[in-house]
Length: 348
Ligand code: PMP
Image 1: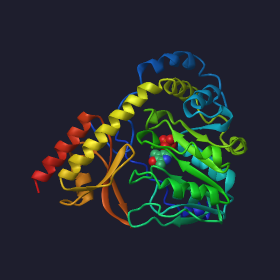
Image 2: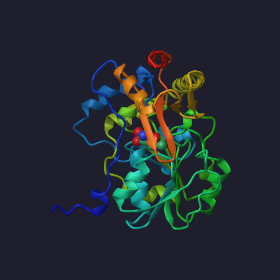
Image 3: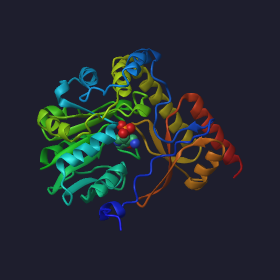
Image 4: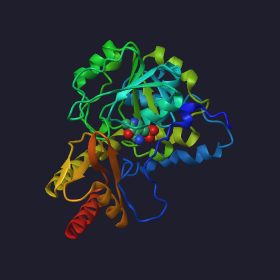
């Protein structure tokens, strides 16, 4: 028998969205950004490729400086991660012993549960109300770490700001606010960092900065927390290419702001069109929407769309009726989706 830890054996593992290998898909399933980064950022690439023989900067100095400019906090309060998933894992390994408690909402990013299980942590799921919102602060005195995403998938709405802040004020452990989707909304929680030493905010360059393939994320927190998390990360957790391209991308913030505006406009158009076509759609402040068709099972819609080479994510959860989650594409991609939906509707 292999000495596999029980908690690993018993965990089904995380199922990421499909990454189709064939060509020709309209890919609206994993919340990537449909617009490419500006080509200028690739100018720094040849110099880095020439240095491929050498290890990268272990502490991502230039990247953290660029992030400090964008987020308005000193770079020694920022940890760079191999995607923001890396930051979530580092937080877990910094603050939670196996057997100790991690809390998160009953409907949220499913990776929290996977990594907590694999870590051997005790899990507390905090129940949201009938609208899947936070209607009171998360009070869980035994939790060393609370993961809260705002905007919160799969719905895509921000959590109630006052309850979130009260959660931070009353927590005896650390609260990680996952802001993966925040750039597609009007608010963020960076100001919490001024008032609460126990808060970590995670950010990613996968969605709003069009760099999902490079795996770059950040943890922003107090110096006391970053100093400890820095000991836990892998020795060279970001490669040269990721560091250099992500640094250049952060320096092109205006380019991305324009993209965020476009994504938001397309999101509102998609929500309106889906509602006209007989879908129940949750309002969203992210780059995806969760929608449930009234005239077809969501699983059949997913399959029929896939047959037409439009890929969305089928979403099933005990608390919520079956849905499809649709990432916001370009206007042309969303038109393709809406045409495919009309075609399927005509066959019913
Ligand atoms: N947090 C949330 C809430 C997400 O939905 C995702 C995307 N799967 C991530 C974090 C991970 O982002 P990254 O690509 O930076 O690891």
